[in-house]
Length: 574
Image 1 (cartoon, rainbow, N blue to C red):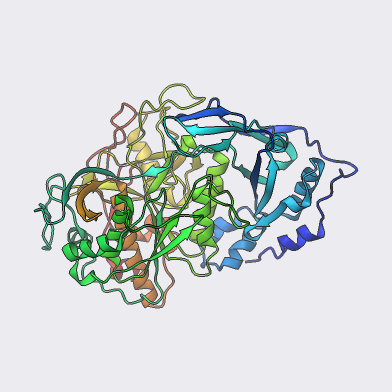
Image 2 (cartoon, rainbow, N blue to C red):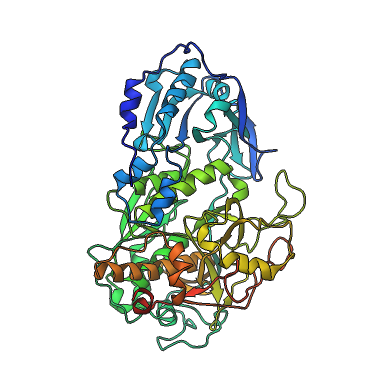
């Protein structure tokens, strides 16, 4: 494979950002819409224009010179940080055009810098009035309705000169109004020591998870991991993502292990704080504790890192961060900047495609592809709203449309749905469906058409039959026992199934590393190929939503719960 060798920083240094136009400038005032909403997104309100003199930091994602090279790399040998940076570097013509555009608008050269190997351009301290002119935008101050949250600067629409559309992927902050949240629910709680109706450590063959709590013993028995002892803990790592001031507690982890896996009482984790993300173990959160307690209990003693990522408008920005109030980009760029990244990464947070501009979703999805090319298995919960939440009326569309979750719909992540009971059936809340932003990837070319043939014309017009189907795999997601703030809880949601699958995948990666093979990396081609031998099909249940019964579970892949994983490393890898 040949890599593009241009140093972007050197190219920028060689091309000064002049304040005058070139002799034959492109039509910079021919602005074509990049993205727009028909109205202010739900749950947000405009508070008016910002005061005169307000400035904003703009971040411009540049399209790579070799657009297909990164996807091709996902199916080959894992790449280094430097090799990935070369693959996503922009074309030299992009830099010339950007220079001319900014020079035309008299953007000072001192305000312009490159970040992340030159794949982003940062414009620091730009007056909002100038940003409006650059982007044909109308920035206003917004806040979530009914809250005292910090305000943000956003616009309901923006554009770029037509000549730049093929060179610029997205600009932020512009039209992304986040609705990100956790993907778990808490139906009941007890204090530690109160008798819990938990399953025993014996082999589990039948269980109603609505009546009996699930714990690590159940999962290790059900998914056949209990006998495997990790042997590559000097090389294997597992990362867990945390957002929205959600912190795990070492004390809660010890108490959890004392009740559920005594040989792992010594389990520990490293905390990394990103973008001003705090960490206060005296204020634990059930989401963080759930995620960490189950990855630790399944993959112990694999080293763990918990990422606390901040995302508030008041957080200071720096030259290496795309946008201070964008937690997704802050987190993924931090990980990509590491020389050695975790082989398995679990995230139980999500949004809806309807909340994201398509170009932003593309940008973030491409960054997840970079993680996969680096050798990471990137795992996301599929969501808890079935095929969609609420009335499912979408801006700019007529009638009901199922609402896909994101990042679960990104084709470069492994999306995890939820099951319940033993034998297993689909959990009714399990998020699943078809993306409106991403087309069906090659690895689904057999499984998804087979489902669509059986579905027939049911729900025609409600979903995109040509879209990427999700989830990719499923696991138990109901009535999970956790310890939070020295109290025991029972929780449910795909926030339970995602860390469960992440723990199992981490064990598979351990097995590969211990036998001198490379880790799985991007999972999905394997899951839909030879990895299917390690999956059990589940054929009952559905995922209702949007006033419908949702999709039904059938033989083979479906958007309810495609299959559940059983660890059988010798049969799966030979």
